[in-house]
Length: 559
Image (cartoon, rainbow, N blue to C red; front, side, top):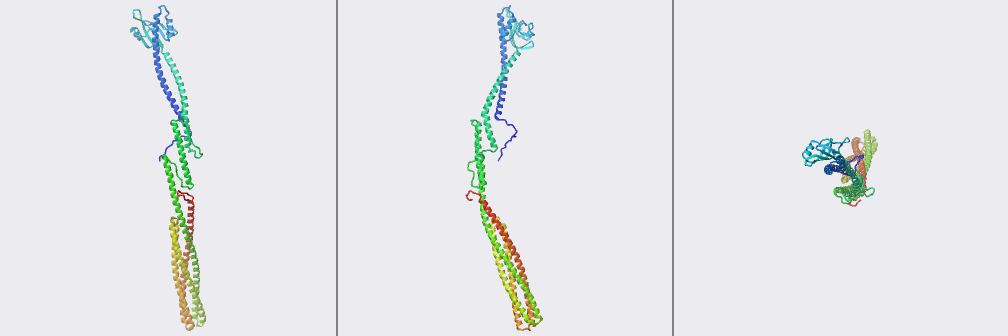
């Protein structure tokens, strides 16, 4: 999605109000308009003034001609011209020919008379008899003037009359007019500016300031949700500014509604309630927010439901694994106890066998020494027979213990198999325990094989003991039958010694087998205890997971 960039002005930058900007623009436009209007008015007024002055000059010459026609030849012409100047505001001159005879034009306090008309004007007025209205220079000063030829009784041109106004006077009047127009224009501009400023302040500045204040709160993220305050834009005009204010107020209301609902949904999710969701319609691009919010809720519900089901399965499997591990540990302990008893019994048998060998050797020595000691030999033979019987009974006890070990090994193998099955059900959580169960099963198999080997050795030992007992019986009968059979007894005693030595060797092998079984059983017991501890930890973690999952409320309504 694209991001809308926002230019950030520095906090220290001075912002100009839009009303002031509009006012300044209007003032500038008015000033430019007034400038062009004044310029045009001045130009037009100058032209009009020039025409008016020319008209005045024309009227002056006409008035002078009329006065001359009504005045006698003896009249004071200078006084007549002064009176006309006072009434008409023009300079007057009467030419006789091309020479100034009477005039109101003064230079250094004296009337300028006796000077001649310029050749151009003389040609136009005197020679051609034409009137001239326009500009002319008199005494190095420009005048707007009117020259009219005068005629004698015969109708010929004998002179001319002049009425004129100084161009400097015309310029002064124009300047005064421009000043007056400028002052009036400035006054009008100031009044318009004051009126426009008041109108702009009421219709633009105040509404825009209200909208700006609300926009500033919106920029700071203040929608009134925390304080519970409703935000209103107090703009009631029927123009674009009023419409903008209404749009701002509607935007804030909609954002307030959206953000409030989103906050409620997220707070519910944070508290473990996943049953809620967006209820109102989201317009425009805000619709993607509702879609994302609903998608989050659905995914969380599905994920938590799967975790809950997995936690229940792991808890059930861990309980079974724990029970099996405890049974396995108990069986391993019992097996270790039986092996210890077996080891003690085998040690006794070994000691008895050693004593038997010693007794047999001593008996042989006694037989070889003298037949006279047959009675003593008989006693030793009886002792030998008793020892053989004890060996036989011990061998039978060993056979029973070996049978017990085989049974325990079989049960251990069964328990290990069950533990492997339960660990497989537990999945990834029971993988470690599956390895332990497999090791326990291997150890049980080795224990069974060692027990079978030991059983074979015990059976050989029992057979040797039985054979030794048979030989001792024969020796006893031979001693009873005849004392002359000492040589045969000696041979038989050698056989007994060999048998007893063979039995001792077998018992030594049995002892080694018992020690191997003991080592295997000890390892089995330690492994079983580790398995029990691991299963207990797995069960504890499963219960903790169930407890954590119970704090979530899903859309199905279960907790």
